[in-house]
Image (spheres, rainbow, N blue to C red):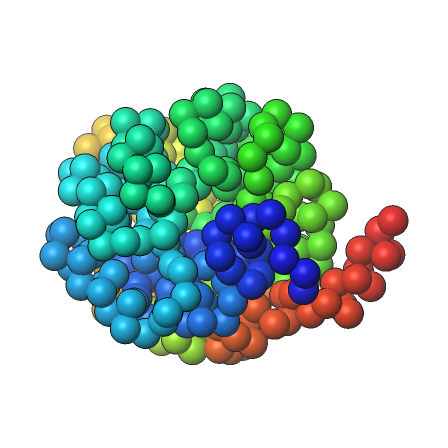
Length: 312
């Protein structure tokens, strides 16, 4: 596929970013995506700084291609990770859960490209004014923490509002989703859920299998009452969450229920009592593939041209 401005900016072959999935997006997955021509991302989450550093250095051994680090700005270690990416020569930073403005000058001085995740036009404009090189417009079809607008509604409005490249995210899992994103004006896509089942992804096999067998209606949103809604696959934990929210239990009780739930699913394979985060696209995923196979299918030039020609 011909490179566009986003590819040239990020130094990649295909305009695709691997989603930053906490406890899942490690050096193994990030390096595999980058080696396949996309932009792999290491999710720092709340991990101790030494662990993040080790993941960055391991990724450097696994690939000589650009990769990025995602920083959750509400994390206690955000400031340390913000400096770490400069010290380690990371090429790209994606951000979420906050405003990265206070770090952008430092990142720019070290040649780091800054790509925040946004869920509204107002936030996209703010990030552009702050110096973002691109923005990821993520719709509520995505897995994990989400906003309110759908990808279909959000992306074209963000495209019209800013002058930096817009990356579409949320509900994109095959070449049809890529074609749709381009038609909406995006210059690339971010994909999380499909990479969950990549062979190079180190998530517990139970987690992968749960995604593979998921149906179109198997995701549900929990945590609406806390102000931090999360899309997950239905299970015992999600039902407990919904019951507590229906009973209008205190936020503290909900937070206690969710404490460590993602690790239970990702590391222990507890798909009943753990938080199995996944997007609505899970119903389209039916098998485990390599990152290279996933990207090649999503950017199959002939197939993509055919899809686009059908639309225009």
